[in-house]
Length: 419
Ligand SMILES: [Zn+2]
Image (cartoon, rainbow, N blue to C red; front, side, top):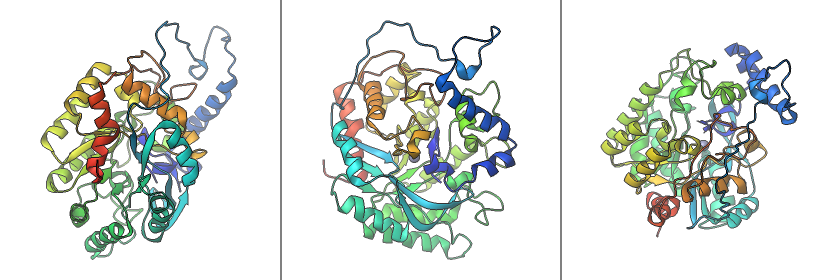
């Protein structure tokens, strides 16, 4: 399981290991989910002339008639550290919980370096480096083979949760991960939304469960920042109906819906997360996807104000930031030392399922355009239909001093690297 998507999971964060058809059946969404997918595919050769005066939503692809500047930003103004990518991930998962130590490489270091060199990316942080032997293999192939270009994070293992010694076992695993060269810990929304008391059954384990306290403390002791993603866009917690602004996205990825069943509310997860941050003030936390609440920058600001050990990252959320450019610009000005550049990049072919995250040149060009220019009303992802919601975005035109911090300097500090 990964976390992508609307910050959700993508295969990386979400789906992998899932039997999607089974899920659709269980959720009673089979018809809707598959219907939407087929419709979107068919829309690639959509017949534009409406029949009987009616036009289906999936055939609607309005072209903007605005005559405004279009800036093509090939390279960022400063060297970039992308702190959110999934160059590898754990191969197996059951009901959203990764199992085993086997790791799948989604790209080769050489292929990744080609994109990085073209786009001015100095280093990538590969969050889903896995555990145990798989983690060591990832670090050897990426970090050690190309020093300074890749930094790999470890992940928790949940398989021994039922062992009363689990809190110490997991803390020891952090120490071991640091020794083999991990540069941080990634926590997927497995914690909070998938992990249950008996791993795949029973009540959901809460984000602030005290069994993880030794793990958070071990991260502080070994200077590993925690990259955490425990909740998703607010729309993912609402019914998938005609009022849901992420209807297309949830139609493509119905497993990203956390509406109903025994899922906690978005607000309950965020409150539990903030309690963890407050309880472990020596631990450095990077709340991914703009603190998992890019729709509510006032809430994210309140968390940042009360939690000095918290930073945020941008991955897969320029769609949200760019549709509120005035509020977002003020957010960047105020928290310019605590915002890290990240994209949630997933290499193709898996990444193609998430156009807002596919690891290729065009992805970075959109981010650079958003941060650096004052262009208006442009697509936030390289896709024919805006994949997260049907809107477009506006550039922030950030000044050089803020760009240098967001692109590079804040990541260097959080990762403990020399400037
Ligand atoms: Zn991710």
